[in-house]
Image (tube, rainbow, N blue to C red; front, side, top):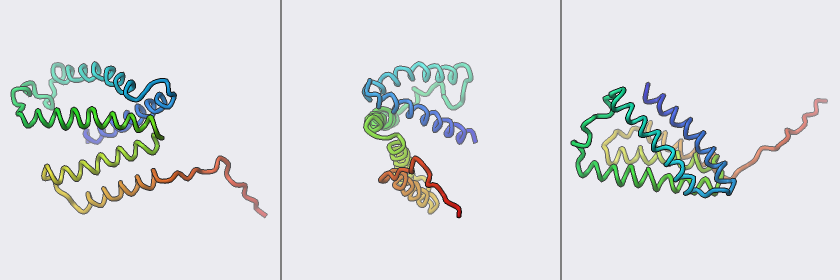
Length: 166
């Protein structure tokens, strides 16, 4: 249950943060890479504080103290290329450029639907995680929902039609 609550919190924080970033970017006062750099510089001390609390105050078992002694070349490669460069840099760079060019209500669902679909497929193919009909169906439904959500925009009328009851 804790994992679900943290995932919900992450989604809420991302939603608020990306709407703020989109608003900033569409002001045309600052570019996407500058916003991303400043966001990262602001985030690093907060993450360092959270890490310090987890390691030394809370002594969280999720943060092993001897982690560096157990890091293999393969783990370092995955950390650097997969998590650091792919997710930590390239994905967020592409996302910030995308929201500087388009509507958050279209960009965010695309990015945040492709990510879990990719994770489910790669988890199955590379990590040996179970692929069930339910998971496969859910991925199809997520992608179909995003197509519906982000397709050609049909705007609602600003005024509802007047109904005449005779």
